[in-house]
Length: 153
Image (cartoon, rainbow, N blue to C red; front, side, top):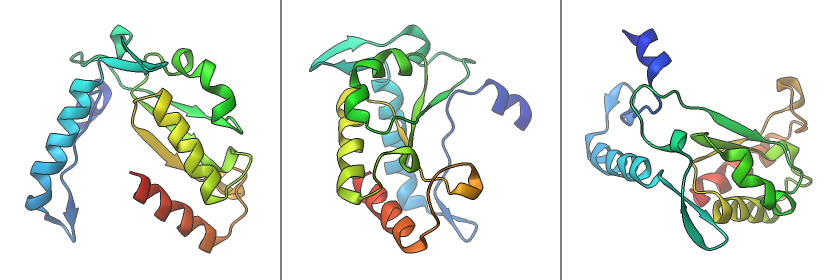
C-alpha cells in the first residue's frame, strides 16, 4: 500500500522517533501543529490581507502535493511574483545557496520576507557544488546556516 499512499497523498505526518523509538511526548504537539497547518492552508496573506487560497491548495483527498523551488538571489526583490509562483503548491523550497549572500543576517532577512508574503511551509536547502548547487563546501558555515534555520523554525 505504500506506493499507492505516496502517489495519492498530499501530506504526510511522521512520528518523531529517536533510535527507532517513538517519542510519544512530542507526537501530540507535533500532530496538533501539523493539523493546524493543514487547516490554515486555505488562506494566503497578501499585502496584509487574508485572501482565499487557490482551490488546489486546500485539503482535498487524493490531491497530490507539490513544492516550488525558489532560486531568486534576493527574495525581497521577487515579492511581487510570490503569489503566482506559489499558487497550487504545498511548500516552498528556499535555495539558500542561490541567494546573493549566505551570511546569516541576510539569510534570516530573506526567510522573514518570504514568511511575510507566503504562509507555506519552507524547505531550507543549501546545495553544494557537488549536489548541483553553488555553495562552496565550508562545513562550519553550513552547520551555522542549519542551526539558524532551526532557530527560525
